[in-house]
Length: 302
Image (cartoon, rainbow, N blue to C red; front, side):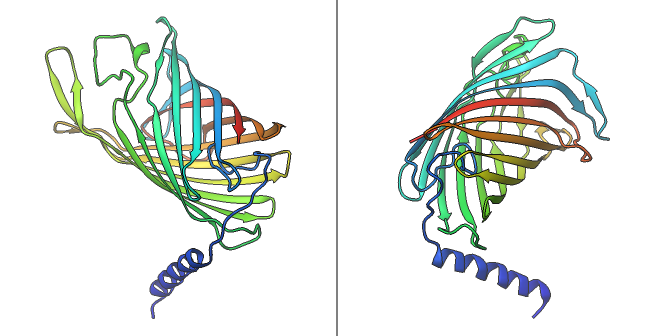
């Protein structure tokens, strides 16, 4: 048996064993130890989140990874309300409703309801002990609807009116979490499909845009202070393949993002979360704009 076949067999046997012997989880009831803001633990039936984020210091990274400041944009503010509801022992639904405000230097600010996202998460595997080689394994399917105006809808309005990328997005994802006492190691992979659509050049002429696929990978490390809060460090890589507009192809885009977040219990099943993200140092983003982001959120679990 070759080494490759051996590791394939070992990998498959591992997850078959996880599936057969996986029981349910009983996590900290305070709500501060969730691996993600809208992840429901076994004891939680519902959770809602009210958040604010500000994207600032915009830069554009060229094909060589060199950055240049984007002069005409000050910041993008997002107000968000999100809900998660347990439908069954293993199935959770969530809904995110954002409101965005664009702040440009030479144009009046504009705010609008942005694109909502509806998702379903199925818990495939959930161990009931902390120190274990068995991970918590979730599969997620999300759909984002392009309700807000985008630059593909009209070229006759000011840039501050664009609060969407203009595409329907369908995003299957897999998430795995390994628990080692108060330390949690997480990883996820998300694939994003976007629909082909007409791109408006002006009121009389349209052209067709075929968007590329997006692959998003994330690794995170969490340390939990049981009953108090947690600290999370994460690294994300996003690769967007070429868009095709008629017979013209755009460039591939690569983004590396590093983030740090802290969560603090502020009441019974009430959590306050502060997070910061920026372009990851020592890794090269290419052909993409990038913002530093500061976020604050209040989370209540039931």
